Every structure is written in C-alpha cells, then in structure tokens.
Length: 322
Image (cartoon, rainbow, N blue to C red; front, top):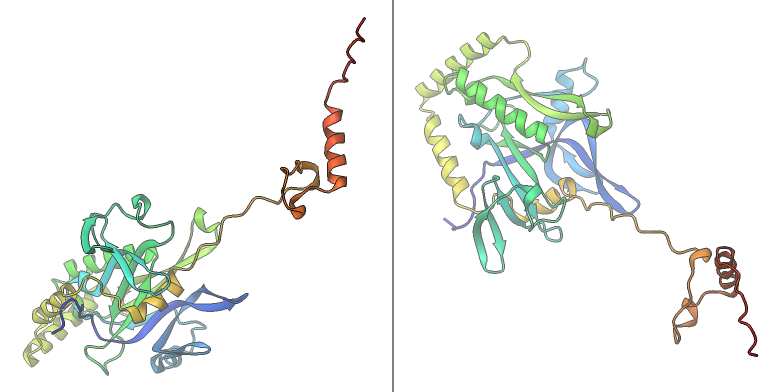
C-alpha cells in the first residue's frame, strides 16, 4: 500500500445546503435552506443531482423542500463518522497545507511535513484571516444499495460540527455502542444570532428517525446488530480498519477535492475599503521635477490658497529703514 495516502470511506455522493454561483465574473458560495444530494460529477450548471435526491423528494410529496434525510452511520466510533479539524488550504492549488485540533497540527513547510503547536485560527500567525477554519466532514449511508458507500456532508460551521459531534456521543452512550445500527436522520434546523443580523442561518442536526420513539429506535438497533453478528458482520473490525486507514496520511483531503472545497468554503475575502482619492481642495504642491500628470491644476492651487488665506492673519509690512 502507498505510504502517506489516507484511506477514507468510499464516497458515492455529496450532501450540501448551498451551491456556488457566478456573480460579476466570480464564483461565490451561496447558502440554501434545504438539502441537495449530488453525484461527484460537475457540468456547466454545477454538480449533477444524484438519483437519490429525486427519490427522496418523491417519497415526501407533502414537503416543499428537502429538510430531512434518513441515514445510518457507518461506524460506532463518532470520530470515524465525523472528521473535524482546523484546516488551511492553498487557494491556488486546493492542496491542504495545515490541519490541527487546537493543540497540535501537521503543517507543510519548506522543510517538509512538521508537527507543530496549534493555537487555533484566532491565534495562528501562519494563517491569514479567513484562511484557516474549522472544517468537518460527516460520512453517512443513505439507502441500502451500497453497504460501505457513503454520502459526505462538508461544513465549516461551528453549529453543525458541534451539534453533530455532541449528538453522536450521546447516541453512542445511550445505545450501548450501537451507533452504526440506529435508524437516524439528518435534519436541517434554523437559528438567528446577532452575528447573522437576526437573519436565519441553517445547521445540520442528527436525530432519531421521524416516526420512531427513542425506545423503538434502540430496540431496532439491537435487533439489527444481532442479525449482522449472526451473518458474520464484524463492526469492531470495520471501525479498526477505518482508524488505521485515516492514520496512514497526514491529510485526508485530496488535491482533486481541495479546489472544490476552497471554492465553496474558503472564498477570497473582500479587499479592505481604500481611502478616497484626494479632492481638489486638499491637493498640495507637487515636488519639483514631478510628472505633469501629478501636478495640481491651476484651479486647485487657487482654491487651496484661498482656503489657507482665510485662516491666516494679515501680514504687517516691515517699517522702511530710516
């Protein structure tokens, strides 16, 4: 096996709550208020929809928008389903440059890969503002066609990362380590904050599937785990294989996916506003030898001198010598 290559769960589709649109010749991210399932193929119009997207919409005819997805998790260990780090990418190539957890980081430097302290984005001197963000990837199963194929949900939102991590830990604890057997669903929730200027922002939650009580879901998980065990399904061995695969590489995101990640989640920040150009009433004398284009006009000189003379005391002529 190739060294330095992280083995991540197989991805057969994407889950997004936004898109990239073109405005004034620039491709910019735009948030949405519903889920969209896409394939991993793009055309001129963006990501090609996955057939599962239309199937789920037809299965919920009363819903105007797709705001919940029936899912199962692939692993019992929450840290294997949700991968979350602080991450910085090269904006030109999409190549990962640094990933950290707030304590330690792996950073690509001129001297090669190094393990360094990670002070988090707010205190990192190596990352310009907006270049390093919390970056999460959640792998879930949708449907039963591919037992190991996952849909990936990417996010740089604190709300989604924190909620998904917390829900998984709670569900794993109360289910007796049967997280991968629970019938769950991803649900889109909204909230308003002062930072959003009271406008709604959306984040992703992980809950028991609609129509089931917690007790019913726990009973279904127990039965599914028993059936899998009798069929020879070794969940602990699957978790361990995934853990080893993640540990093989310094970065889990490939260069091919990196450009799409940068475009959608790490857009260029707007340049700071520049000071207005000087107007005629503040133009000063150009130094001798300056180009004619930089010299003030006669009208600006007169206006400037008149303004100055209004605040200047009259001069008293010196007395003539006796």
